[in-house]
Length: 337
Image 1: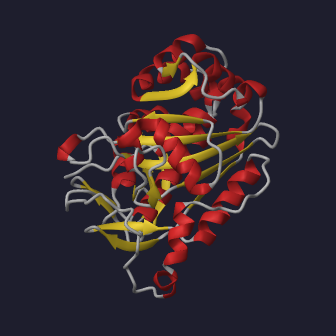
Image 2: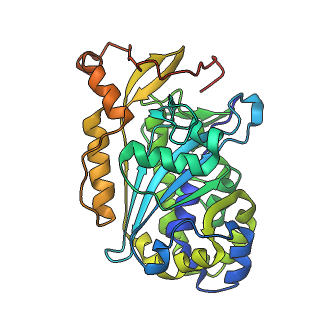
């Protein structure tokens, strides 16, 4: 069975709860992470509100044909003044312009990572929601099991049976270990809410880990965990900036708010997309910009222009035909999901 990569919980905890290092073997832990030598932004050096794009990279296991796609995407803002964190999940199948591509075209937003790695993904998501994105962190799914086991499991409540890879988490309350958490956060096809339901379960696990990892019995061992997880993580932060993140932004982890963008299904070139209405894009932009201390800004991009061409699509819930004005050039097979 094909695996659905779960990235969000791991990344969010590493960024938001990083203060738990408390300088215990700090340099050793930071060296384990794949950092950059050159700064892409200096905002973190000024203790200003910052934003991250969190990417879960598909490693192409189990025969997936879309090797290199980012299976999970989240925008996270950290504000050291308000000591708050805002996390927004972006539907991986959202119709979006590939910003930085040689020719103007629209694809599923998770294709940006495959085409231009984290750099293009940052530009694409930034233009998509009208929010500056300062940094990126990419992780593969291998870290989640270790992370959940590190905090001795997480508590969840599910309103449906969650089955994946021969295992089932029954409806109700459960305490999950790392292996069970993978099952809980991978499944989406049996969820009536599809990928949106999966996003909520991912966020639930994230909150569970975030709550527990700040306890003293885990904090004192966090550098050892990070040394193990480092091979799964890459970022465009420098090593010094990663240390600054740990020291100056960890208090943001005490107040975490999460949300998600909900779209409408459209069938384009033989595959299911999520088209995000302009008002929902604008609402997301407003909340994220506010969390960064920025004034709101009216969105005007390829997505909003296409939405204007498709008023009938949004008025009819049964209508799945969306006119991309010739910008859709990619065809997906039945194996793409």
